[in-house]
Length: 195
Picture 1 (tube, helix red, strand yellow):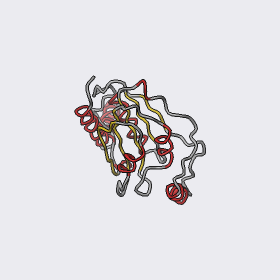
Picture 2 (cartoon, helix red, strand yellow):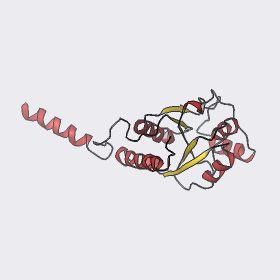
Picture 3 (cartoon, helix red, strand yellow):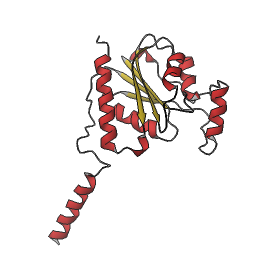
Picture 4 (cartoon, one colour):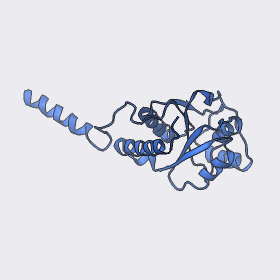
């Protein structure tokens, strides 16, 4: 009996130390960036996954960009292509928090047809970033396309201090993604204007 319990515990420990788990993941702030707002749009959950990890390492606040009418995964490709081509800005379910209360704003979204998705474009159209430092990231499986240049064209009054491109989020295990996210945050800290 004791041997079975010991083997079960050993098996569980081996399972938890496998590629999907990180034994060195610390859900405490690793990088001091002051008050951080992390604004993100995610359709499939990949960008949200990265935003949550960034939040854990920076102790920032999350703000999801949510269209008032959710996209249907079956038809999103044709709808998104039309929205991008026509510069459509979908109405949002709620506004993002004001950037006044934050030292840094991190903004992330998936790449749609080499461009920024319309819900992110809607936020960028409405928000003045008041000269705040902004770090932007995009997630994708193929190419980042013109995402970052389109982002720079659409954002108002921001001091862009870092740009991150993250490919293959869905294929990455937690330990790998945690390390990549922490490395990017540390690079932001190096570029971050100290108060």
